[in-house]
Length: 197
Image (cartoon, rainbow, N blue to C red; front, top):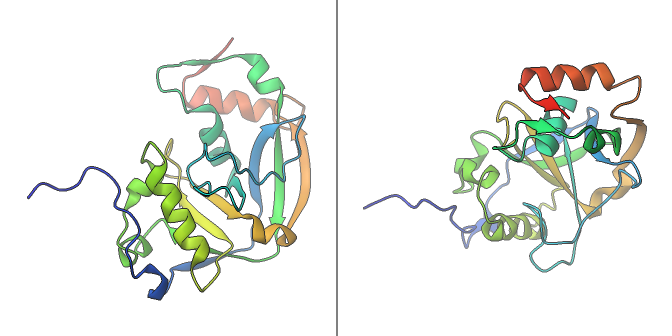
């Protein structure tokens, strides 16, 4: 029998399984348009772990600045350049979690939930959003999800449920092309062999 090529839906007994939880206490990173606040819990249904019913919001971030860069700027595989304006309109925000209990979908926990790493790569997002809702509804009430970056699986990303907003504190927000991040951005472009136009 051929293996399924699409991510399976959450198992019917997921609510009775013990979630593989990890506690996040280190700084998290988010790249966003400078005109907007970093604390944005979206309900657009357009992102990987958005609630399919649009009832709770999701904030997307990463455990490192490099992961945040990959998630924002490496999405278009055929594009080998980035317009300078795409960088100048964005900022890097660092925020600190008080202590977040998140479902760890980066290792053995995947198998314990009858899942695999297609959770980080599956498109369209219909099934991954079902997983988000099932994990949000779980009796252990996790604060969010930790998963591998689709664009560089060395990195870990986070998708946080809006119920954890009180546990987050903004530390600093700086423009991507400002003095703090400009040289770092140049290093990222060089690493991925992307030109700035």
